[in-house]
Image (cartoon, rainbow over all chains, first blue to last red; front, side, top):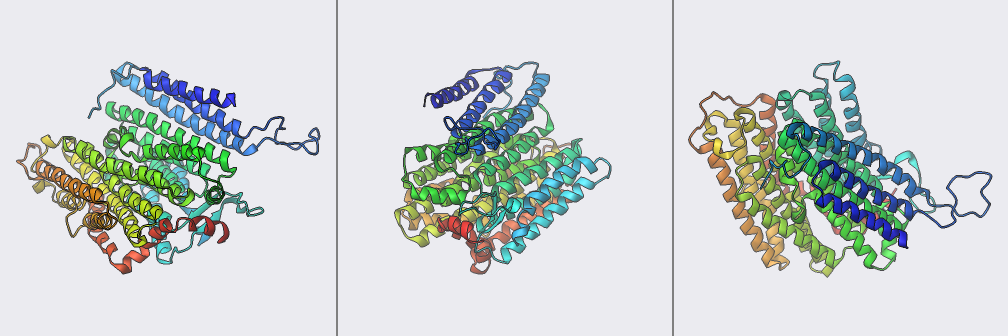
Length: 113
Length: 511
């Protein structure tokens, strides 16, 4: 059970970083931490104690329990999507740096109201 | 007909792939292909609507049949509600793409623009059709990542800033949705929405499920920019190129936000009193606060963006009232009326808000400004733009005989019959404030003293065409209140939401 709480704490760490940091790159890093805490949670859902990897081979006993492969497949998909999101965020952050000459979000504030 | 369903995802996706590959060799390829595909999808949706969508049609990707009653394939489900939203997506998508033919000349990368737009449409069509929770997340990300890039398309200071803000908040929303999907899978061991609904019906309602519902409401609420979650919308919608603003405000917040909420909370979860109260409360807040924030705006597109929040509030209260009545066992005909009003307003908002953003783009195209104080006297020089925007303004403010009047009327009548007197009063007041706000727009943009010394001309043909078609739709959609037309387009969607558990049973057993 403790591991689920650790996972949740990781989520909160990411959220804290996203809310308090001012540097664009640090915001992206915090976002990625949040994202990976959820991927970890996904992987945990499918985990079964003493379970085998869901691959049929000669070494696996007849009555073995397998871990659930579906969350693993979903995590793989979600990681790829996460890659696209992070790449997009970083690309925009670099463009912003070229325009403003700073990563500080307090100085990037044209949009108000 | 089953085999026509995946075309909604395949065709735009193939368009998005082919445009960058062939578009750079063949001149004009991107515009032709995009318009042709979207026009075909619009016609196809009309064909499906007219041939009747009483029963959901499920297409199983890969042809995997259920094993021992457990669905294992990803389902694409076409029913009345999906068809309605698909119609909005294809129609507004086609008109925005056609409008962009002239508008986009100011940017350099036409191929990228059309490819991203097609990708966004593929994602939205997928969200609307899918019957699988994780697939919903994947299509949603396809749609929103394309929209992040499109918001930043101008790559100037404000565009980039708006896109970053949008991405961070949109990313959090996606994560909340993903967490919700994980929780659902944990609880039910399945991802098919219809199957989840059946599994949940057998288990008791507990704190775990409530937590999941809150996660999903927050996630999709952020995507729909309902009021506590609205911070990104005015920036993103006002910074994007005009056809994209029309797509974002007119379609995206509905397809990935409100539609997903409706589908999940009516058809997947058993409808629940507290949740329906939360949804109605969020809708009321959006309706009132959105319009109050809009009053003080002088940037034309920002003003329109705040009105989007407010008008989506009407949609949500209409549906939310229906949900409360259904849970409480109130009068079913009143519930049906409230839901019909909400969905009717959803179509109407797509049409008139799309048109208003296209008008704003036309004004910006010829004058180079979005500030209302800098405009004035455009009525003589831009006759088409000003006439169409007058139509759209009357429509959004709820003046008969435009469509906005009828949908607001249905919502208010349903609120009075269902004894939600406060909501009815608020809806009337908000409508009046909206009228005031759009009178300001009309006066400052079109009827004041001219402030331009340079010569300006009316916008090119493709831009005029899209605006004229939309203003005709603003008038024509009023016909939806008459029984003959309503039963083809609106009633199937209302039935899907009224018969909440029907979706699960027919999707699983029907085919």
